[in-house]
Amino acid sequence: MQTDLFGNTIVETSKVINVSSVPQRSPFRYPGGKTWLVPQARKWFKSCIGDKLLIEPFCGGGIIGLTAAFELYFPHILFSEIDKDIAAVWKTMLNDDCNWLVKQIYSFEPTRDNLISIIDKPEKDCKELALATILRNRTCHGGILAKGSGLMKKGENGKGMFSRWYSSTIAKRIEAIHQYSSRMSFIEGDAFDVIQQHMDDSDTAFFIDPPYTIAGKRLYTHFDIDHHKLFDLVSNIKGHYMLTYDNVEDVRKMAKQHRLQYCTIPMQTTHLIVKKELIISDNFDWL
Ligand SMILES: C[S@@+](CC[C@H](N)C(=O)[O-])C[C@H]1O[C@@H](n2cnc3c(N)ncnc32)[C@H](O)[C@@H]1O
Image 1 (cartoon, rainbow, N blue to C red):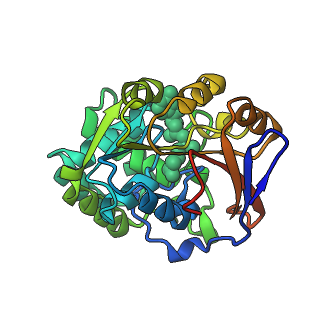
Image 2 (cartoon, protein in one colour):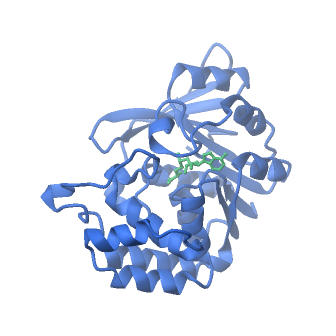
């Protein structure tokens, strides 16, 4: 472990995680998803022993919170997300409409016309929006749901737009999540409000994965957040936290300004490029 000029701890880890060894629990194919961080997150969860709640305020596909719920690291997990399409999926998975969603996924006949009629249906209720979102997530390039992202034409291995539509895998993941619904809650809303409401609770842990400063714009409908305000909030959290960011000078500077400790962890992108991401935490004894 090293310390920089400002007294910030800088921990360098070198091993790249093989994501195929990590159980995939999210029904989403989420851009910027944190499956690769699961082994490190498990170590962190263990250091949070005794905490009553884990909050994942920018949840997206929520792989870290789902892992914590399924592997019983915390009594309860609270997810929040501001994107109404993603929120519809979480709400439906956790409520009684989950059955309907699962049936629709199993019975969906993968043709372009069927896809378009579900996606383009006007005035969808929450469960219909959930189905449309899952379908879009599986048929758009890179799972990107932001405006401007198009349906795949060739798909993977030339298998067309449904090359990522594994209906029974997706349906089973959703059913499994529903089985754990008493241990999970979801709020459609602003992560900043959720953090503010719980930052004084010393027995609450936060896994915070905001849209990154550079890539966020292309990947998410809601990408424009106040990073300085987030650092301010995080530096006032009383309990445990783990915050992830892109490893760029501006972010390291904000961490230093708030005297927050960080480390870098290597990950492999979908294009097999190894790059480092920044992890900021209240302590690194768990690493
Ligand atoms: C980096 S992604 C999270 C990915 C997630 N950790 C995973 O593994 O799938 C960031 C998410 O934050 C959401 N988001 C952006 N601004 C938000 C806000 N103010 N409140 C809540 N969620 C927000 C985006 O819609 C996006 O889903």
